[in-house]
Image (cartoon, rainbow, N blue to C red; front, side, top):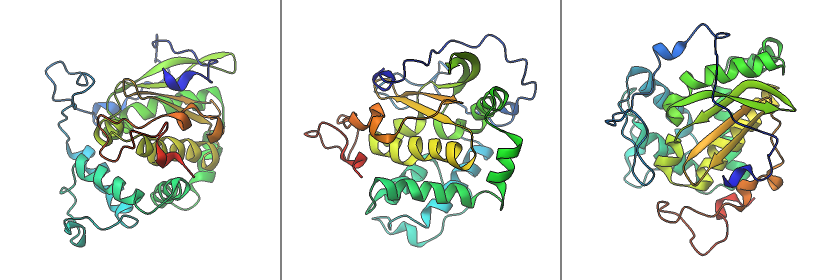
Amino acid sequence: MVALSSLQVIQFRPPQDLSLHKWRPRSFIKCRIAEPTGEPAPLGQKTKYMDGFFEKAFMTLFARKMEKFAAPAKNGSASKEKGWFDYDYESFVDVSKRVMQGRNRKQQQEVVREVLLSMLPPGAPEQFKKLFPPTKWAAEFNAALTVPFFQWLVGPSEVVEVEVNGEKQKSGVHIKKCRYLENSGCVGMCVNMCKIPTQDFFTNEFGLPLTMIPNFEDMSCEMVYGQVPPPFEEDPVVKQPCLADICTLASPNSSFCPKLEA
């Protein structure tokens, strides 16, 4: 796994017991895969999903917030506001691509931060810090919530045991095949529109450290609550080249994705 080279302290193990978390919201917010196996499609094939009410509601909510920062769509469709159920995952990803246009890495990340803050009531980050100080329990609780509430965005995932600062805890989330990366095919979008802003939001706004470790070889990803993320310059993703076979905006002659430049 390319992104694990500098984070050897983290060891992933399958979960043994999640009895701590009796409440399971995944029963009514569930990512439904339309593949015969019920699992994400093999690498090189796009997974088919059956999005329901909650999935489309989340897609629409995020897309509408991001649309304010997006460049106009080439076909002119952006001039007419879409209804609540007119958005699907492809149109959500399209909005993300248009947000990136004309912005550098830091500006793209700042847009995501503003979008996330706009969805919270005033004072929410401060309240989160009081409710979830950076403890083992808080890290495990947020990992458990991530599985159901992030499914619409990243696809199916599971809580896994990790080792953080020498202590084993069930605060890791293994994303089997990230839906966002699979549909965008773009390293820059993964890093600038998801990984870095999400890490920064939890670590700096909420005060709960989070490290995300994407694997660009199989499109899986690990989220580790409680693990302080490395500085961007020391993160292995900065050396990640474009996925030239699937990214329409790829720079195959570059040794790393140019969208990762400041």
